[in-house]
Image (tube, rainbow, N blue to C red; front, side):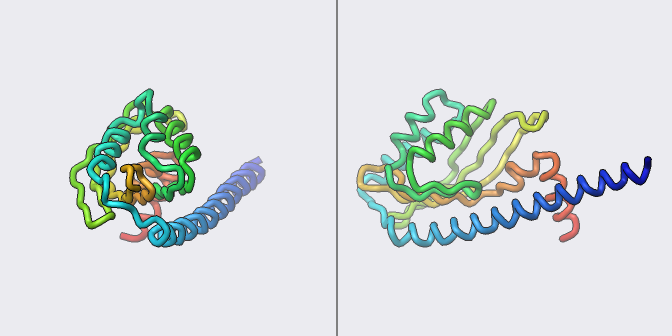
Length: 193
């Protein structure tokens, strides 16, 4: 009986490892594609300086509370139709898919707050330093996440976002809180110390 149990546990463990490795390889390819997409978007989407203040204000309002019942409308008004968006987890090049993603994300949160601490403008490039805090429930656990980040933005002549590249601690801000993934991240960190 013990041998069967050990064999079953070993098989389960090997299956989880195989799925994790396959997922990591797929995510690595997505990250590489997103990196190249960002570089291409920098060349393709040069941005405008005409309505930067309006764009930054709209960005601040839209992201202040991702649980806002009007989030879909706020995001539709914020983003141009043709965009490049990468939040380190997902990449989008059209507004509707992005709005759908953000609306689903907001609907899954109990509380959300993004506070903007600094905005730096260099011609058409806008860099926003922020902190994000959210509460949700996943895999039977309450999650209270706090993270820091920076976003590179470019706007069109009407103050709508055409380029949005986030840089944030997605491991500490999100993945650390998931049972299996968080354990794996903690183990990897402890081996690097």
